[in-house]
Amino acid sequence: MLQYSYLQVLDFLTTIAFLLQGVKEGNPLVRFAIDYAPNPITGLLAIKVAAIGLGIYCWRVGKLRLLGRMNIMFAVIVAWNLGALIVGSVA
Image (cartoon, rainbow, N blue to C red; front, side, top):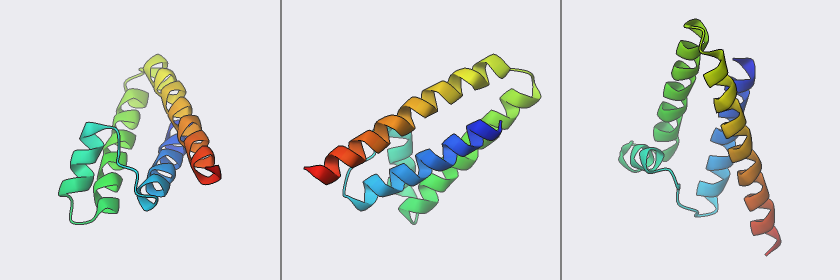
């Protein structure tokens, strides 16, 4: 659960970095929250709070395999985001 929460924070920060560079969010659910919240950071934060709530639910009911798969997915997303930010800053 700690890894999952850490990956959520990293995803939040890399998404903020993308938004600051003018890149649109790729996930339609997150894009909706960002567009319709009073502030993009508030919308993104609401999505991350919901994601952490989902992680806590999985942890509490013993869905540890699912939580592990979500950790892998978010680790790949964060690595992709960091790679894209590095490549974008070089170009």
